[in-house]
Length: 356
Image (cartoon, rainbow, N blue to C red):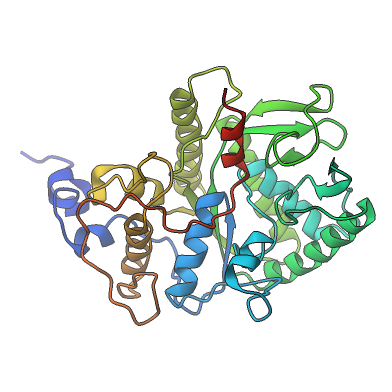
């Protein structure tokens, strides 16, 4: 008697893969579609968790592209406070697939439509990346000039990118009514004021997420960028939800939609791959979860394990993310209740201030 399961590899069975506590089982978590080496030009973009990935990859010696690099001119914390060197560009957090799509559209357009500008205490903020200037700028024209310079730098990164590592964080978002642009946070969180007539809540579906990602790929291909995509889903839960559901249920919906969209693209489209950072940090498959005492931010151990799994799957060794020559630790036991980077910039965390 024969079974369709009898010739499957160990990674197809829970006990012989997840049940093992070794580097080999971690390496089996991901089978890359295409070769990525330390020399591959990587572009990082996405939600707050993408900042952790960016730093870990840089420390691990990977070839991470860096537009608008200010590391030679400013201390690291000051760089991060002003949106520099958090990702491959100074775009701030890109939480949704719609944000990513519109950013690509703006970068490749010779005359992108201007985005909304928010005001607070006489200072002006780019509503599409409101945290890159913490004190705002003195005039709306300065905001627009800063955005134009950013998009020029981003075009340069896109022209060089061979692989785009995109971390999707949310399905919930706010849409500016006048421009149609998706915003990284609601008006009135960083700057501006909430007006239901000027910004509306939207919870993206799996179909919309997939359409936005495919459209982004098509736009890049039409302009000569052949970069392939490695999609990840952020393990960081929602701080708050405007959906009307309990925040736990809203988080489960958001992550399920994003994970399902990534999975379908991985199975159906050769340009898209999926790396299981979400599963490594939030589930027991790598002896986790690896989250802080508030069950939100990934711990240092969690981020190191993500990079270790990435490196092992690509046959690039066991880097820990603390230096190109560092050896990776074995799968650690109980994680420390400390976030990996306390200067991670995240607009969403500001929503906690509105809790009654």
